[in-house]
Image (cartoon, rainbow, N blue to C red):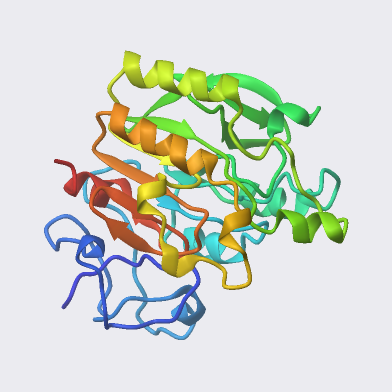
Length: 295
């Protein structure tokens, strides 16, 4: 029996090309009988399936994944298949899409996420409204930081940028936002675009203050520092000279200032690891795996 992490929420089932950092250890995790990694599109075709995604002796788990852009179908299937509970936390690294339209259409995504048992902790992306601008949202303290929430969806939380959250004994600094490379395409066609998509000067100052004041274990951002941009993920139809990469350059500064152990981001629609930085899109990765890479 081979013990692998199920980590793809969208893609095909394959036993080939498994990243070393996504392999779980038999002594820590209980898995099913199949000797391959499942993609959610293939789960229903498996006779044996993975019984559960839970570390022995643990009452709760923390998971990270990338953009879902308003479509929670695969994530709901992942949560249901592996029997995640209300003690678990699922972190989405921006572009959740639950606050995109600003009307009842957003409820489809919110209802889907709220139907899941875990707490869903969300970072701000560039293709969504900031909850502070939506009248139905309230603020509360959660795990050491401030979050935005709605009474109707109490398990759906949106992090305040610059706050540090103690999640499962691990300090997480949150830095949301990014530039939309399709900004002008959107504006020309009257599609939604949000002027406050990138961190403001006030947010940047607060983040820098936090980095100086406290040591963090993990940085959670939507985009990445400029030095790590995955150029293979650049859209070929976009003139890169027109792209505002000021947030990425500023994150270079934060990366130099911060004493951190891992950095996780979304935005780029790619699954990749560079040193301590993890790009997530399709993959769903447990905190325990990230901790194994701590130095």
